Image (cartoon, rainbow, N blue to C red; front, side, top):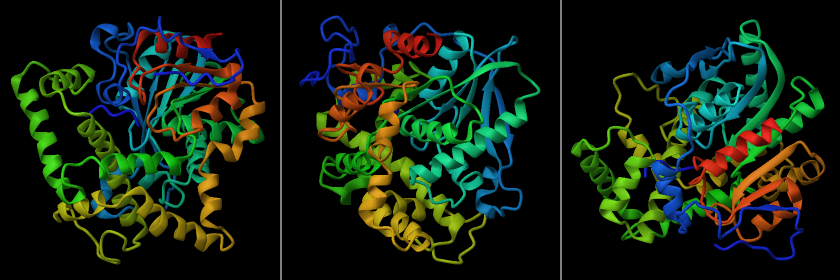
Length: 425
């Protein structure tokens, strides 16, 4: 969930084997986790990566007989990408964060860093991205991490079948960031039963522990920090977009990257409350796209009237406005839980919440030494006690930086070095 629009370590009695970055010597400069989440890594501190690598966009059909509504015609096939080496090399799958495609900023960092290190890099969109919801999700009701990870695993096999005659590989590896980091663990668990890839190493980057807790936190960041409350959401969006447009029109920055948002931050110096609201808005924006597309595919009547067929000329503005006002807890209680309760009548609300958490696979994570973790002590998507849970489960396999917010330091040189070396060593 690293947002591009926009410490203290908890030592407790943790074993010494946990790999802490030293608070004094760690050079990432932003101490405020909300600033770090929005700004990212200032340009001069970013890892040395190639300006451009050759990335091949690819598509595959997952469900041959699935009928796609006219309004979603452009999402019929799943879009993924491959950065391939000329020579025999290990292949690493990378999974994007919430609502993101294979071209998201976090994915570009992984593609360049891992390709530069000699890997074939096969990048996959998040199962919460509209393209995945439409073309590759079994139920097209995203948010159930067990089901979404099974869908990812199916896509990985299909993608591998599609490219296996074009490249030579040695071993398979797996990583993902934010929600994609948590999904990487669930995918690895599936593969340890089916032994299709036999992943040599798996790295989770800034994963949530509990999807329910993290999404609830992000909901509150928006609802509690918009000036005047949620009734002024449209005014807040308009203000944010106008200010970003002003920066863009100066012509000083032509790309929506860390440098762009750092410049916007320097010019307007937003308050702590505004930063929180921007983070919540970015998540809500992704969720709104996901909810609307899911509703169109399933014809559930949650956002648009049931059985209404939208055409290419219909305006979607009002539907999007409705979707933007649906918080995750609303989505969970009114859409996600009822959908899976229908299929599993004995399922309870608390059981579903638990199954959407790393705690549901704690024993697997605790015992599986090939899985590593990298996160930040001040990651705002972690609820109280969840950092300690990660420390306890991963022990020496956890790399915990003292600051960086949620993915704000993902492009920092030390972090990129650690990610690459995790797979090389």
